[in-house]
Image (cartoon, rainbow, N blue to C red; front, side, top):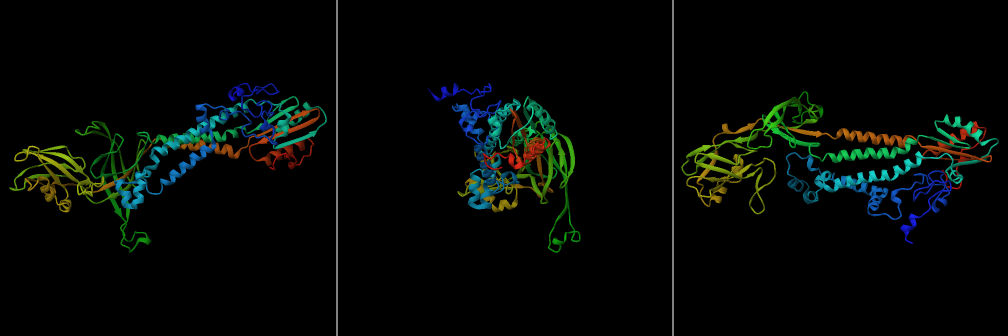
Length: 564
């Protein structure tokens, strides 16, 4: 006969008449040991009251195997260790999310060398949003749920259906046990001891000459309340990856420009920035006489707008409605419906926002007209007289790669450059390519004229230049704000509060039970608690003393097992 068939016909009915589920070690009703392993124990294992758990099936199926994997405490420990190691790896170098206008593909190699480059290639520069780290968190959450269900449901069933009379072998195999003879009727003796035990805070039930006293059962649910709190916490952390739930970015806002906040419908305008510096007399003593320039106070007059229409249409101006104004200072952020903008840094150097180049004939010097070029957001096509300039490629940080070809070195506006295809009279049908550098220093550094002559295969028929400095639009300053949105933080606090409640329940309270039965003048007592055995023995000794039975606390220890 196969093992599976054998398990189906195993007799799990106790002599007390209770039918127990397969795998139960102690009878759910009377506590009598049902397995050979339980029979051989001098002191019974009471962690889950001997109940049958799904993870203990003798012939698990596929779903049961998955259940068993996640219900294993050992697996949970491994998952936590792997997550901790991953978290530690993420702290070796700064994460990408902490950067402000820095290209990580270049930054790690330049700042930390080859090890930093390997760190970036392995994806450790965004550890906490990587798929493997999120997967570990999901697996820990699954382990918490399945571990809890595997234990709490059978334990609840066992504790909620406790019968008062317990088998004699159940009582004598507890860590705290005592036997003595008494005079008189057993039922009367139980009724006399009942109020004494109740004064100790126990809930007492009796059945003839048997008694069950119990208190603080709720402490048994402490670990599972902790699990619920951790599950809520993990779900909240994972929800941060959903669009619109969490944002923590650093953004530069040039003065006088309304700039879109990523992944939102809001725009924020720097309507004016001011900074006040310490004088030499007001400066802290440790900085006096050292030539330091320290800001005393810096403030951004911020205006927050909500986009109502044409928000994603690059060909139209978005319709903005003002929703809030606030003078942002350090430790005094703007806060509008959970969107917070903190003062982070500033830059008093003027920022180039736009230029107005003029199209000039390189041979005759004839001017054909000028157009306005937005540095960050140029148009795709410009009309200048009879000529058409189509933007072919934009470089925010122009440079030459190892092969000597033009390349974008970073996302910063360090050396903006624009490659145009120019069409018009006296030009080839397919036009000519032309590089334009708005900054004079970049024109000289990259030799704009020589570069364009090379592209044209000789002399340059047309040339681009800036008419005058009056046609250059500069922002007076740039303020850097830390913009945050965190809609899941309340749930993180709720999860932490539930977890703390579970810890308090489990650590500061003890589930204590006392079983007592009298058979033909012989009193047998068994008691169990999940912690603080000395306190339990002291309570039982005090109860016996009030019943005129002198019992030393140490004599309540079950000598058949290990010492308490």
